[in-house]
Length: 169
Image (cartoon, rainbow, N blue to C red; front, top):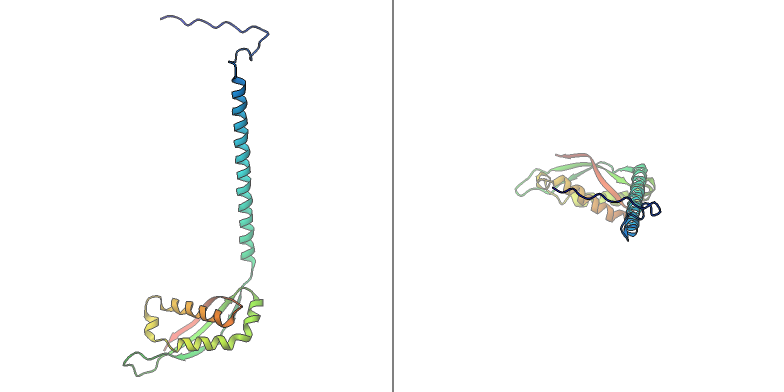
């Protein structure tokens, strides 16, 4: 095999630039510029992500610090509609608590409690025992009571209806 010829050393006056092919300096500048641009974009994107996470964490912390208020509705015993062929009356003893955003909303709702109790009684008296025995019966009752109480106290808003006592006799 033939040996490769050795390259002649560069003349002293030209230095390293003389060894580079023409246009090689521009390529390096473009590559370095593109790398710097990518690093800057990546750093800016990372900064935006971190800022967004911090804002989200602050928002979540503010939501957790907001105290909720609970309002007890007096205990109610209501008769239920009889099942077909049933002669013995059935009753529902119900005690619920209303969850509201804060005590200011609770003070707005307090004068409307007779309306809330009336709404509950009118709705529950139209139900049968079988309505509670079906799967999700108490869940549907809770959702319907929540909808009706929000209509009764509008423009105030109740966030949840919580059962404290729920007995069918």
